[in-house]
Image 1 (cartoon, one colour):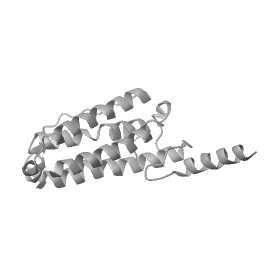
Image 2 (tube, rainbow, N blue to C red):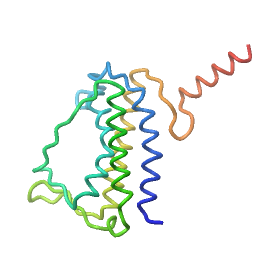
Image 3 (cartoon, rainbow, N blue to C red):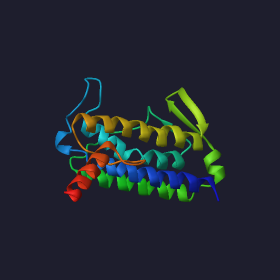
Image 4 (cartoon, rainbow, N blue to C red):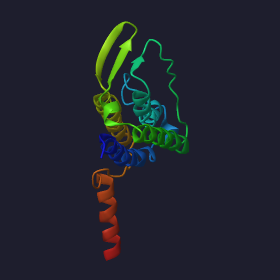
Length: 176
């Protein structure tokens, strides 16, 4: 079994967790920001939804030059749009990993800004740091935003506080 299968399995598991969180984002509060230096909720949630696309462009090329990149942030204005962006990015990422060989994952990948090289690392390390860990970092931020907004959200690695409260309430109602 190639290493790509492990990357796909992790992506699928974590994408399901991310999707659960994106499904409860109150897009009517897209302008919310917990701090003047923070992204607003709409930008952050859309960024989280789109981040699996980093897998695809890491596998498709051997470098990214930020000086030449024409990135234009988008903003999902509904839950359906947010989930569609995420589902499309995950599907594209899985497709790019399905055809990846161990040799492909060991190829070097460079992040640069013009002549300045930020780093050169094997693609498998770039997937872990720039793609997967990047998703987890921003998903953690998103969980804080949701908590500050009073949004109940589902557990990812077991029950969340909100799941536990709901279960206790259901148990109490059933015993009455």
